[in-house]
Length: 77
Image 1: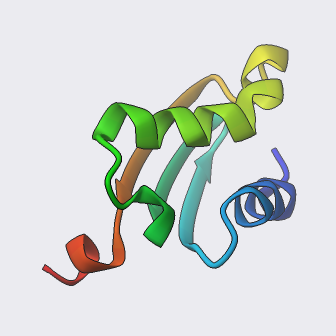
Image 2: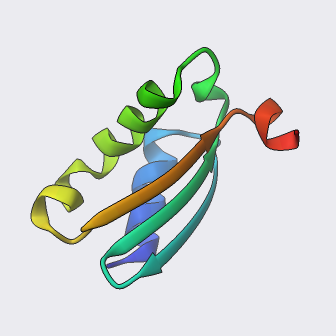
């Protein structure tokens, strides 16, 4: 799995976000902080990420995805 490609995909799809990612084999863990999450519930936030990575999930390159999605205000707490 190409960490730079994943990072580019997410930062292009959610400009200005802060991203931390960890890859273990075909398992991906993400922490994404963005103002775009303001007003969205947890499911809608995750749907944004799944939408960006859908091609990698369908291909099997990503087998498991764990994520934390926060607004900048939530990240400070």
